[in-house]
Image 1 (cartoon, rainbow, N blue to C red):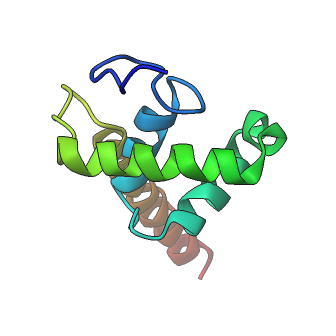
Image 2 (cartoon, helix red, strand yellow):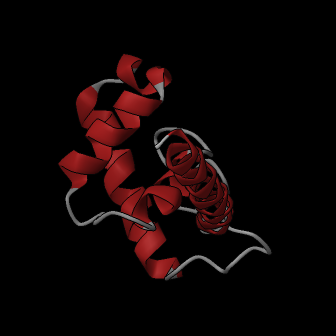
Length: 110
């Protein structure tokens, strides 16, 4: 086997999605805890349940190292967090509006 080639996609014993998935996880979680990362991945992506644990763990460790090496992900135009925040904001505004209406109704009843 030749030495590890850098930069390629599938250089982890798993798949091309491992690094992006861990990057995603790393936004809100500590990837220093490999066991937690593995648990998360296996809970979310059933294909990982079929992988031998030791091999998968090796891949996860290397993917975590790669994620840390890359540093914080370059911000895309709109992150999931932004979308969620906007969604919550809209919902919050709507909910606040609804509550005002309810209050008016209650007052009418009294």
